[in-house]
Image (tube, rainbow, N blue to C red):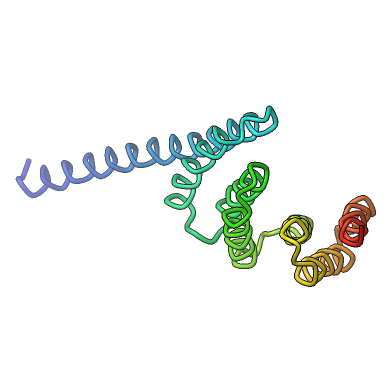
Length: 170
């Protein structure tokens, strides 16, 4: 065998090995990001908001590396962080994460209108808590518009938005 042939064969074997390692590593990272997100959800549902925030932050780190900063996958985690920061009373951090969610959702074409409508409802509720009623109403009206003009129109979602609007007045 010629030396050139052996080098070529060695190159192919190394390339395959590197590709297999990348694929395994990538799959492990995807699974880890998903696992951390799921753990955060379970922790939040049981009232362990600070631990949930830690889990979501690590998941966010993985997802930004895997999918990019402004994708639906990262937007989901930002939304979860926004909810949990609101639950512990850190409204400014909550708003920061909600606005990151909005950027991510608007940047990703596969975003559902239901997710965007829910996000606007959450932002509206947050502004109600912060006593910024005009801004709250703007977001709640956006939520209603997005939901009512959607092909995924859901009366229960509209009812939830109307409840938030009623809560704003009382």
